[in-house]
Image (tube, rainbow, N blue to C red):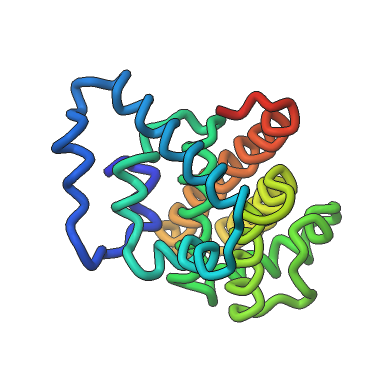
Length: 212
């Protein structure tokens, strides 16, 4: 598993070895082809006929199966690609579901300490507690399969920026007294900032029919 996935890792309920058996890691072209084709097929199929039960199963996928199944397909893809974007969206969703209290703490700190439009774009209530953030990220995930995909990416990007801001402020708070905790928040802030930038770029590519 890649370094960027370990922070949000969740034990899985079933092994996810099929992909590596069929498409060995020493064939990156085939890995890339399968990642892009599966992402495009999944998205187009569901968006053409977004049945409620199918959408709900996809939104709840990582909760039910963990992240490894998706990681095997999409985690090696470029950030600004369709499979790379879907991978990051599922990672952010899993981060919130696994620790909604920390997510709410970071979000509120970012929201109150920064004066930007991100709060409006993300769409969370103010203040936003753990339950509200779980509901928000699931709503954003539904937007992947229903509605405007670019808007879902932009909402996720705004959310990541607020979380990153909150993590950076908390890192400053703990820097003098708990350096290890400060370092962990700094790492999360940097990663979420990168996610925010990549998701926003992917939204622009999608609007130009160039996200593949």
